[in-house]
Amino acid sequence: MKEIRKYGDEVLRKRAQEIKDINEEIVELSQEMVETMYEAPGIGLAAPQVGESIRLVTVDLSVGEDPRELIILINPEIKEKEGEDIDEEGCLSIPGVVERVKRPYRVLVKGIDLNGKEREIEAEGLLARVFCHEVDHLNGILFVDRLTPLKKRLILKKIKKSMNSW
Ligand code: NI
Image 1 (spheres, rainbow, N blue to C red):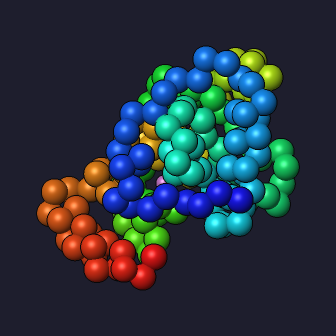
Image 2: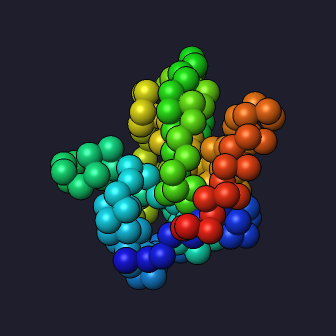
């Protein structure tokens, strides 16, 4: 289990580094991320959220209920986007904040799995949303940055108030 870094931690604002070598450390970290994601519980986690500024994400819409749904992706990239979907979104790094965010309805994600094999995933709806959210994390972007300026200002006030209780 890793500690989840919260809003205000500068690691969440850095552009994460590409992974060049899938070594034992990366494999171990990905396992710890999966455990941390399940424990939280959450449906997605990006390495910067556990303090590692590298391009690695874990996603599981079933939160551990169905092993086939676990996706561990290295150097993920959103290659295609289509449509539009507005729905509620939250983030383990910003506890207690849920807001409606506009995302593409369908995306094509490319990345590498732990065996070094290239993977292409077509995702729709919630799964597409999670990938967009996690890839944003790798670029130092948080979901509150995707809100309108007015909404973002209001939410930042709320976040600053609740930060003391995290
Ligand atoms: Ni998040």
